[in-house]
Image (cartoon, rainbow, N blue to C red):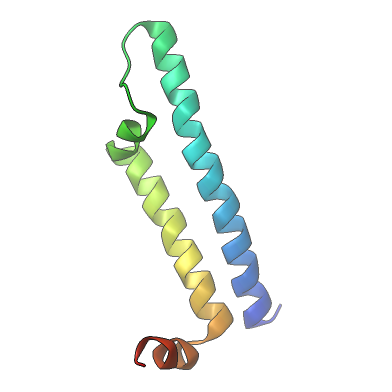
Length: 81
């Protein structure tokens, strides 16, 4: 598998996992509503350590995939202009 293919795969899978994690926040809120105590905003759950760690790992995979796909030289040219 080439570097570009692996990077593209990492971005696609990372994006899918991130969307599932964000949708899962609403599911967690729904389960807590049934228990009787819940936070008013589903994004408040993202501030808790296990969930925020999972989100940051997924974002790191997406960034790594972008670096693999574009290459570090091309990224330097994009951001130094």
